[in-house]
Amino acid sequence: MPFIADESATTPAEVTREVLGGSATALSIKTARTGFTGSQRVLHLAEGLGLEVVMGNQIDGQARLDLLRRLRCRAPAHQPARGRGSPTSST
Image 1 (cartoon, rainbow, N blue to C red):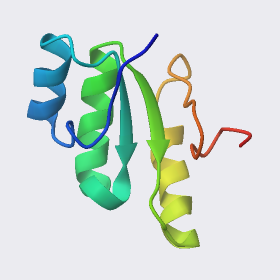
Image 2 (image 1 turned 120 degrees about the vertical axis):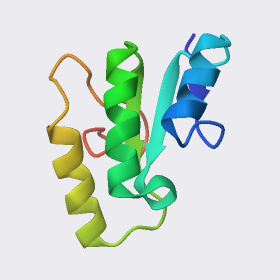
Image 3 (image 1 turned 90 degrees about the vertical axis):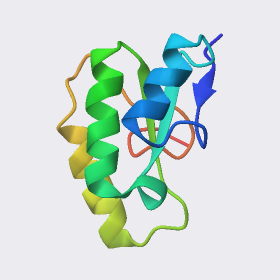
């Protein structure tokens, strides 16, 4: 069962701490919380660490959702977005 870091991991340093400490095996990235540049940095780190990643949003407008999809599409195909609210989920 994955342990998903959310509010506890919004920066690369926090992601590293949570993963190395055994507190997280997956990561939820919300651009409203971390911005697009910060989200991209966290996404690249998560991919490098082999984490599953969920890209989500928090009451974002259509423009932000479009940018979120573009950010996620840049990720390698071997790291699918999963979970409720992700741009590629069916829920």
